[in-house]
Image (cartoon, rainbow, N blue to C red; front, side):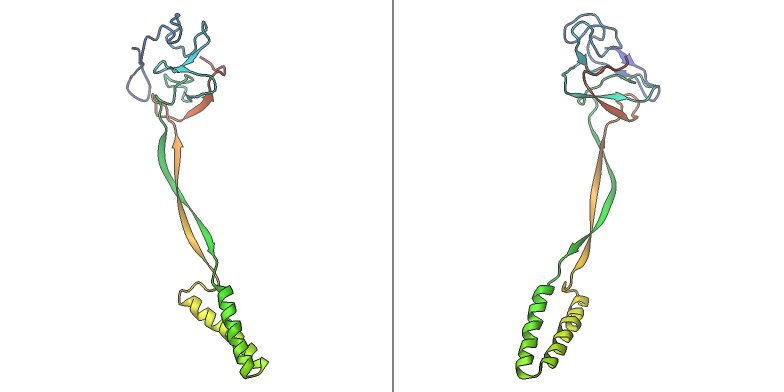
Length: 177
């Protein structure tokens, strides 16, 4: 095991023999995460092979011992933190179509026993007046909006050496060693 000294924290023990490729066993530099003999990429920390198509993480802090090295998701698990919630207004339909039908039937009954003008005035008074009173009492007659708050969770990775942000890179691309 080899120790990495980080400027931001204590030394971290790397796993395995750092002088040999974990895939083919040929000699590699202790700081390597790529074997030039078998052309395999491996995790700088645990020495597990990284297959093509996978993604690895790289530290972006130039002062860290893990800067630019490939580290797998198992060594650097995803972390979560709560972000401020997102608030939005959601419209709720009212019962105005049913209320319109009830007031029309009532105005038709008034028209049968009276004049069309009395039925029209009664319909306006029922639909608008009584509908407004019902809406102000809490019945959803003409629609309203409801405030919805959605909690957000941010997912991120931070370097295991210095706890600074990391970036995700596809394995198999050329990176500086």
